[in-house]
Length: 282
Image (cartoon, rainbow, N blue to C red; front, top):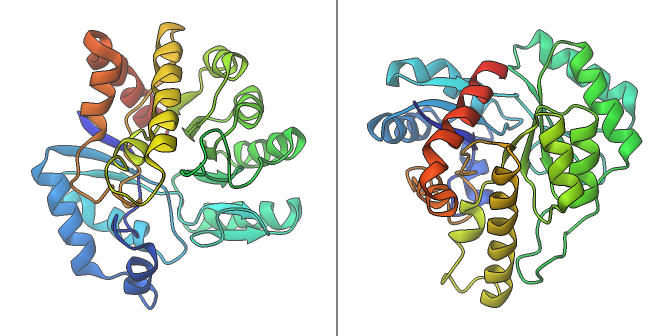
């Protein structure tokens, strides 16, 4: 089964503002169908969306069976007010508001909950994030509330301490996962957390001239090293391109090739296990 376990139908891989504007009044069905047609022709049968607050992922889920695709969406990602994620998700001020959003998502048919618990990589400065992660206590409560409502939890998560906390408190999948260390990797292994490293979002920046090329190369080298370490420890890896992110348009189809290059002969078996785990859980 060919799967992309992390993509964004609302984005197009070129300009996030214009792509969101296209759907702002209502999901733009021709654009959604065009992307689904690409995935269908490339042999994808499972897509897991990273979510949006305009209903684009939900519209894609309704249309996807026509293309032979099972589609899963968290509806809108949930982010703490003042922290990364408000450009695409719904913000909450406190746990009461967060719980209300989780309940609303349950009533509205979300397939899982996505939480935003860290910033992004700064692609001009290797080792730096645009924003620190939430506290371990906050992360624990966010996961607990969603699990109590019967949801699996996907976490946008970078930084070793944030990754370690999320895995320790039972998050079901960690997306991106920049700058892990040994403790974070072991926490994911021990708690059977699926890691979706979205390496396309780094590798596809090479040679584009948008960011510092040396920094991009160092960030990619760090990701490759950690992916190999995690696989050697027996961790669960799943392919997700983050399609829709800059330089990763729908149809780029780069993630499987990148992970195969990184993991070598074991790639097929490793990714098959990860894909099956995501499909079974989400």
